[in-house]
Image 1 (tube, rainbow, N blue to C red):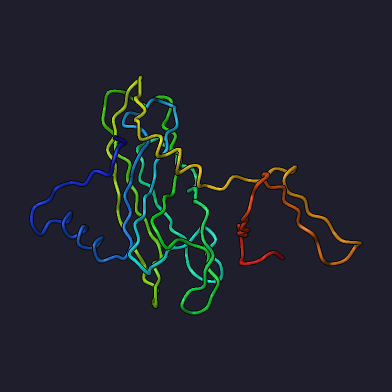
Image 2 (image 1 turned 180 degrees about the horizontal axis):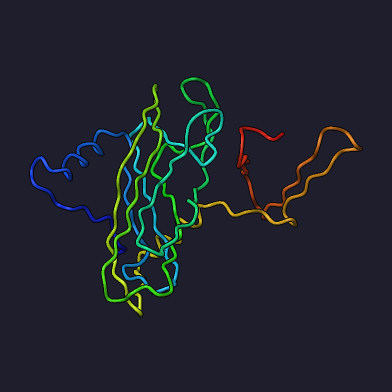
Length: 219
């Protein structure tokens, strides 16, 4: 199966156990996965941050709406490795306990990021991908969440893509893609302040939702 988060085993009372206890105290948990187990010099691969959320709690999209804060990660990568921006799946719109309109997730969801290794990566040796993930989890109250994640991979001139890359394909399909100029147009109506937004959708579409990438509304 695809590469999963690797945790060090520690002695009773060790830092590893303290971190595990801290993770258990949160209302959301995150696991680091990769679509490969072996990495090729200069060839990008994809990692996933898979979030699980306790019932009745929610986390936020990249644009949280009227309140909230999206998840973020601070990577600790091997020298020469570069991580791309986090890719968020489409959210849901709902009102929180304060009646604020927010965009986010009330069930498990996955963030993706592309990581590019250097062209001169030394093969035949292990490497470690690490990160510190922070988020805001909310119910009646909002609490900050934080978890350290890590993943051990190996390097090779002939990487083997795992069968579970199909799961990554499914996750990628949940990430909205930018619309083209042929699909979206914005026009003024007879010079008025009001503008009309037109969006071309595939035939047979029954439901369409709009989420602003920035702010809580169009301006």
